[in-house]
Image (cartoon, rainbow, N blue to C red; front, side, top):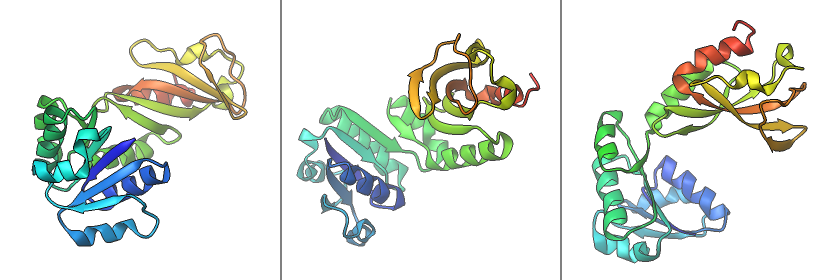
Length: 217
């Protein structure tokens, strides 16, 4: 894939190294040339100094052939403008924008952009670790209304059917990992010791799930 990453801060540089390691073509754009030092010697993509809000910069980055663009600077205004130019003018098929300040989230939502709110995600994850230990969040969906949660089947649920996790409006089992092998979840499957279950869960309902895992439901 041909990818453009705008912003070479901590998030952008880490993403650039990751996608470069997966053999994607990567161009990293930043206004400050010193920012590219974060990429180190392992980065084999291309760097471009410039303001990505300028169409001439995006054209030099190859936006017309890009499969995806991530706007990850610390400026919400720059991320919003860059993402909209990429999607609406150059029809980049996959555009993701970072929202640095959560108070601007509504503007990005109205623009119909895929977003990541890094500070909110961190706070949400810390809260989850503190208040719902034992639940591992694999991904959040939408604007964190739903989450993919991995749980280790507790001893008191071994020998019972996976249907226990089918709670209407709360959770639904998606995948079971048994002895390292993943399979689609079937509600009549009998849970065994060591099973990992991946659930789609309404994030507001995590307390109910925690009670079930602790044997309090």
